[in-house]
Each structure stands twice: as structure tokens, then as C-alpha cells.
Length: 197
Image (cartoon, rainbow, N blue to C red; front, side):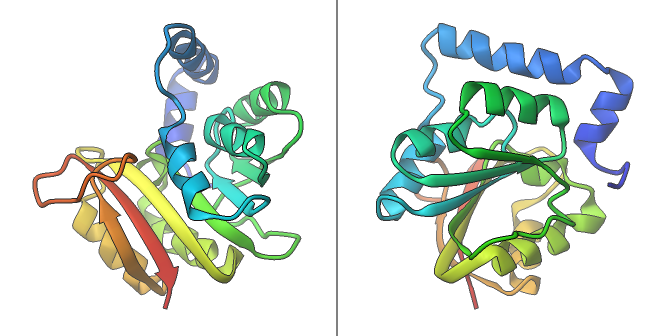
């Protein structure tokens, strides 16, 4: 794992960062925040019982929702503290510690790879295209990748779309939110639905 990864740098500076992250989302849930927007979009894209990879799954927020909706979820994240929390909160799914730039899927392809939570902006820049290539390799025939992250995080949307093309994806749909608002040049968030070329 490269130390250019922003998450790993934050952990190096603050070893309690993962625990703070977990508590932040517990607090948001306790206060009634809507934490399932990504999951609702993905659920609408696939038939019941779909195989879904939650890439950079963190505490399993997205994948846990999708498992509850009847899907087979595998989550991968490089932070073992977050993976442990995902396993505690959502024990019916598979949660694995792994680097998205290196992880190999042991089973058949996924119907969807979802990468929410600004994960792409945390990746080391040198691994971004490789991670996207692996997303494509993890997909079953007809599968799609759905990636969402915000502006101002060191990864321009235009650069991401160029990287996705380099990785062999075509753009199916670009949105500005997980609730299907259209993407515009002034959008401060991107949700890209991608299909292998």
C-alpha cells in the first residue's frame, strides 16, 4: 500500500482517526441523517440477489443497506478497524481488508462495483487508473461501476473521467447527486455510472 494514500496519511498523523470516523457516522445515524442514498440508487439498478462489490466500504454503510435489501455484498477496505466495524454492524456480508489497487476477487464477477464516500479522492494518484482497471475486471458481463466523490478533494472530475476512459470504461450516465440530479459543469459532486468498453 502506498503512503501517498490520503487515508493512510491521516492514520499516520492521527492513529485514532478510524475510531473518530466510526463515531461520526454513529452520531449522524442517531440524529436521523439519511445515510442510504448511495444504496438506494444501486438497489434500483440491479435485480434482487445481485452480487455487489462495495469498494472502499469503510464501516459497511452502503453495503450493509444493500445486504438488507437482499443482495450478496462483499466489501473491501484497507482499514482493518473499519472492516471490523462493518463485520460487527452487518455480519451477514463478507468484509475484507485489502488495497483496491491490488485486491483480486476470488469468485465470479459482480453485477455492480460501487465506490462511494469519496474513496477515489483518498487513493494515491499513482493507483487511480489501476483501481479503475480492477473495478472493470471485477465485473460480470453486463456489470457496471458506480463511483461518487466531491469536488475540491484533489481529483478533478475531468481527470477522473479521463482515467476511467484509460481504464477501459465508457460513461453511461453522469449525475451530480445520488438522488439522480443531472451533472453540470458547475456541479460540486459527481456520480459516474460506467460500463466496460
